[in-house]
Figure 1 (cartoon, rainbow, N blue to C red):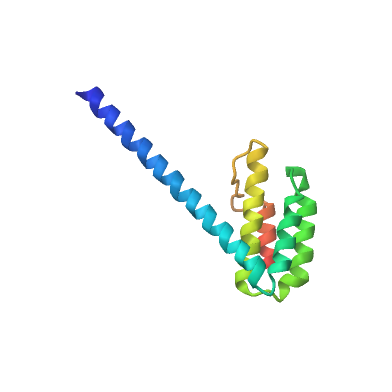
Figure 2: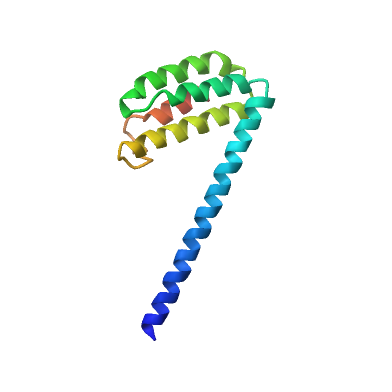
Length: 130
């Protein structure tokens, strides 16, 4: 009896994981569609699309300094006049890109510094966009 119960629990766990994976794929698709809409319809959409393309050029953890330099330049030029929605989307792009770089490097996607430690690239970018 105990074995059957374990199998049922495992099946329920597998089903929950699959449902979660489906929801995550739907979320990613909706985020992508929203971003694509911003690129086409928002006055700052073209700049945001160029920003995203430039971020994709940074592919390694060693690209942190050049990426931060680029974000600072964007923050001081077109992002200074961008509405909050565009700034939030730019920050989202930065976050996703850093997570992708870290994951591809075999690192955990997040590694936020503890209080008293130096800020990481994401936090420095966030400060620039604030």
